[in-house]
Length: 325
Image 1 (tube, rainbow, N blue to C red):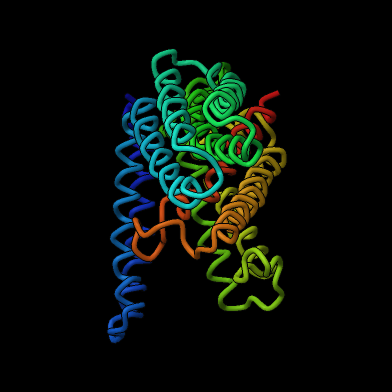
Image 2 (spheres, rainbow, N blue to C red; image 1 turned 90 degrees about the vertical axis):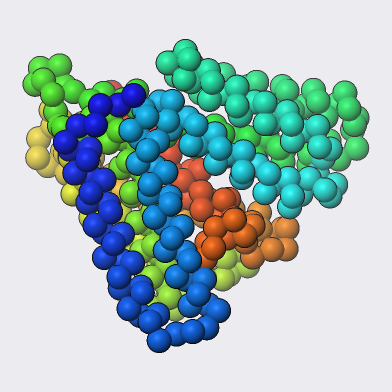
């Protein structure tokens, strides 16, 4: 379990304060609106608070807590994926259960071995297991579509998200300077989640208000260049503020170098989040649906909520590792 350091509690209190302010503004803007749309928006505020509470508890639980949270998230996302495609020609139900076992096993290994080797091992094991199952149970009928589809799902919903757990292994102190901050290891995954959600929200708000130039209307009609740059700016500014507080990326560097590293983190998360969002949008367009499910009022399904994070967690992790060398 991660020690509940003062800095960690302060960080969560700050996140709660921001969400509280946003909730008040949203409720005031909807106070005279009795439409179904307004009702959904109000319920979505409850979802945001549940998500923040779940993340807070998981972070306090360290590797075990985050692994339990993201394993459940991955399983729910996989179920939504299977409902969208598993009943069609993409593959038999056996592939679904193979990925379930792979996902649960992956997180168990990350917790009980307390190492990072499962990250390197998972892609190969997933490809071998899914391919072998498809060959032995079905044969060549729809082989590539089924194998690629479930391998894609396993990489996004389990391998990609598990980098949030891997972030706990990044350094929390600098050997020549002692303790670097009061936040501790939880600062790494907290930073990538906060930057990812900020990018999503900023892109949506700026795009709705000023979006004029569409980027990829065939995949995501709501995406605009204005929204993209708005999200990039907001995420980069927040990264400059939070990176020195939550991580060791700027430790041991000059002020200018630390600033550049923080800017780079914001850019990496923003671009990766944008691509992750489009990745899931393309999936939904092929399935012919607007949302992956109805689990989260006002947000859609679990896949809709983790679309950006499925890319940003791994992108930020490898960026941080690269900056350490």
